Structures are given as C-alpha cells and as structure tokens.
Image 1 (tube, rainbow, N blue to C red):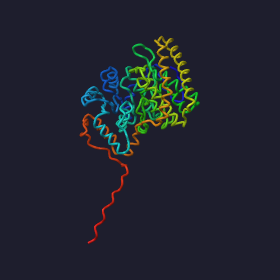
Image 2 (spheres, rainbow, N blue to C red):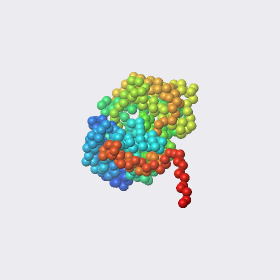
Image 3 (cartoon, rainbow, N blue to C red):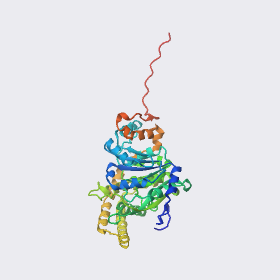
Image 4 (cartoon, one colour):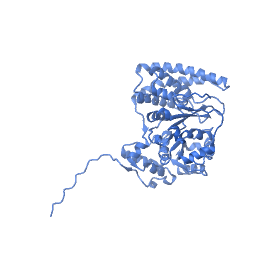
Length: 427
C-alpha cells in the first residue's frame, strides 16, 4: 500500500497489524457508540452473519448493536434476537417492516411526509439511524454479508471518530474486493462504471469541486461507513441503489472535506451481484440509479447538467476510459497471478454503456429523487418520534394494537376555523 494523501484524508493499512483492542474498548466506553447492521432474514442462514456476531462479541464497551431487520413474522424477529443473545452489550432487533412500525410511519402523512418506504437498504438505514441516534455519539454501519469480517474492521473505522481531537465527522471504508474462492477482482460497479463515469464527466465539465470530491474516494460505493451523531441526524437518506453515492452527496453538503476520512480495511469479500439479463436487473439496475444520483449531485452542488449534444460525447468517452481500465485491471491481475476474464469485463462495460442515454433521459423527466427526510427535520415537528419508532420496532409491539403512542404533532396542517356560536343574550 502506498502512503499518499489527497483531498480526503486516507488511513492506510501498512500491514503491521498494529491493533489495540484493550485501548479500543476503553474508547468505546468513553464515547457512546452504536453499530447498525441493516439485514434481511435470509442472512441468518449464511455463515457471514455468524462471523460478524462472533467478532463483535469481543467488543466490550459498545453501547448498543442495532439490527434493522426486514422479516415476515414475529417468530423471525424472535429467532434473530436468539441469534444475538449472550453478547456483551445490548442488542436491539428493530423490525423495520412490522405492522406497528408501518402504522407509526403511516401516521406521518398527517404532516405531509411519506416515510413508508420503499422497502430496502435505504429505508432500513434511515430507521436504524433514528433508533441509534437517541443516545449514541458515534454510529457505524456494516452490511450483514461480509465474509471477511475481522476485528480490524470496527476498530479502524470507528477510532477516527472516537477521539474528538481528530476533528473527523465522517469515515468511509475502502478495500480490495477479491473473491475468497477464486481470488479474482470483484466490485465491477466501482471499477468499470463509477470510475470511468467520473473521469468522463470531468473531461466534459472540467475539474468541478464536486467531481473532484467523489474521485477522492477510493471506493465510493463502499457500504461501510461511520459518522458523528450530529451529522447522522442531518442527512437525507436516498431510498434506491444510489444510497452510497447519495450519502456522499449529503456529506458534501454538510461537512468540509477536512472532516472526512477514508480507511483501508484490507481484503474484503461479500455477496456478489450478477450483471443482470436486462437493464432492470442486477448490476445494470444499480448502475442506472447510480448514474442518476451522480448527475443529480452535479446539478445540486454545481448547477450544471449535460446538454443534449453532450450525451454522445459522454458515451464515447466512457467507452474509451472503460477500455483503458479493463487493460489496467488485466495487467494488475496478471502480475499478481489473479484470474482475469477480460472478455466478460468488456461485455459488462458494453452493458453499462447502453444505460447512459436512457438513464439521462429518465433523469431529465424526473430530476427530483425520493429521499427520506433527515431526523433533525422530523424531530422538529414531532414529539418523541425516535422513541416511538424504537418501541414500535420491538417484537413486543408487533401488533398494531400494541402501539401505545402516536406522534404528537407540533405543526398540524391548517384547517378552516369553525365559526363560534353566538353568545347568549345577557339576562
């Protein structure tokens, strides 16, 4: 690993194994920290989540672990609670799609807010943040399918935030995506789509600060990140596959680059997505939504958009840059004796290229994305919503009738005043 720095402060892994678990535990006890894991019930049948549980079981001092779980029944929630029993810190299994949660979130329509979905990682993260931010000063997020999870992951990602003297508000992970079985390079959406896309847009627009910011991240699609409570409370959460890029856009809006860091977690492997047979499936769908998120960020932060005559330029540039990257990754793989299927990489590049024109047309038709409102906005207009959500997500509140409290509205929609009855004549 190199030792270079850039716009985003980079915490390298120099391979020296300088971990300090006792010191990390002391830091966790000094600053309340919550880990959040958005999770589907199917992950409990895979070994990755068991590995994550066993590693986290060594973290005495963690304030709480929140599992934002999408499940079909109270029995599933109970099974998830049993899976995490015996941990040295409290574990809260929050049932994101339970009936009590749905009723509570439906009641927000009285404020003109739609926070009922769509169901997915973004919605789970948004709910989990609402629950986690009640007491935590630091919140870290990991996916549930990480097959290489190690004690270094939480320690390296959280320590920049646990010491306030560093001045860090947001930490993003980066890593080497390699298959455990074949050792082949993974992460095609990052390597073959986001990287060439950002480089191509820079040639069209010039070195815009926002594009320079995105290119400062070595793995912009990493799903592992951590932030201070103040920042987490003020982020709008995207609800589609553009979650990671969309969050980077929100962080750019709220935090100076000097308060952002990225940390190398080393070797990393998790569940892989297929390319997909159609643009509505797999990595193709993911890439299309990422495209719109990137261009929407350019609109929001730079006031710029692609002119119609620039669409062809983007497609030509993207293909050229992408082909250069395929050659580079092939060389990297060859020298490291990694298997590399250049033909399949070229085919993936072609599939991604066909998404550019229709994706941009769709963005022009619907430029405003659906984002879940920040928690700071919600708590400004309701009383106790975070506590109500935590209660509703418990298995004890799994029925609609168990939801004991509706949010107290501070600002109700204006209604026409009824005329007061005339006063009775004096006797």
